[in-house]
Image 1: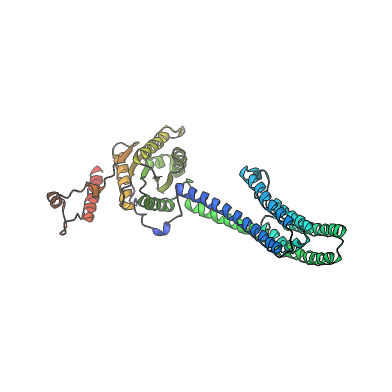
Image 2: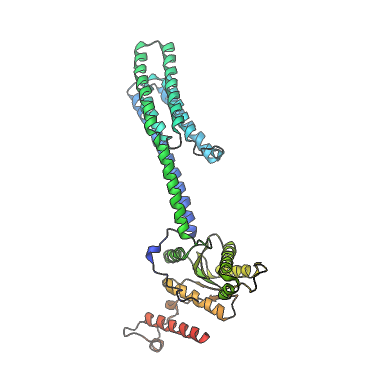
Length: 424
């Protein structure tokens, strides 16, 4: 085993977000929350429009029949779009969020309400700007100009119908004043806000580029698996999660057997190809929730979140078997195999203790003939200790009658080092 095994732990600056299932769960939660927030914005805008209309009705400017029509629109139109999203019919369209159809329905509904009740024109002008602003992120400037022109033309048609049906000069004058204000302000509004979609597009591209850079920083460029920094941070994160939730946690250290001989026979390029192939075979053999990465050289770390020892052992044996039976090619003169050490986390121990136990199991796998999986059974020292005075005295008690854990760890580390030296 390499001399730096275990030296990468305790680097708090290497923390990397959430891992495995926690990461996917968080992504789903974030998408769900984002969707809920968007619907909340729509409902708040509809509520503001209905609230002002109710105030106008209470003041005697809006008829009750207009409120009934408005209520029908507020219920029917959102339900139609909700059905589209539930059935995923929106995925058939280029713009999946259907911002343009929503804006068109909102503008057409307001023009219809103005036709039913001229007093509603006081709501048409301000809420036209709100509606266009709502869809501005997904609507191009040219389409926004067409929408503005459609609103102006539609308002002119409503004015003409009111003049023909009602014949009220005072109403026509008031509507003409509103029409002039809307027709003069809309083009300027669309022009000034037309840069918003472009800015949104630039920010999206920059965000995707940053995410790509972050993803690349987590990967080993040669093997396309997680690198040492990420895998160590992931182990620290999973250890904290196991302490908080009590869920089981296992790790395995995988070491390619006789890799120096492979490098000597095939050259470094051939050795790199063996590492790439092994990484691909291993990642195909592990589960989606497992975290696999290169720790250094030909040594790899496999983390099993929320997994007990037996399932972890089965996965390790599957990896070992797949590597052994993989067709490595006719030019491969030596057999490619792996030695794997696997162990389970004990509540309260340090990451270094946890890792060292798996390291010991890997060492035993190599000493035992290689191409095998060795399990290092976890032992909870706190459960194993007994309050027997003679045992305590024999094992080296402190003056206060408690076991000196540091002394025990040093003694164990010395035993492992002595065993390794004797093995060589």
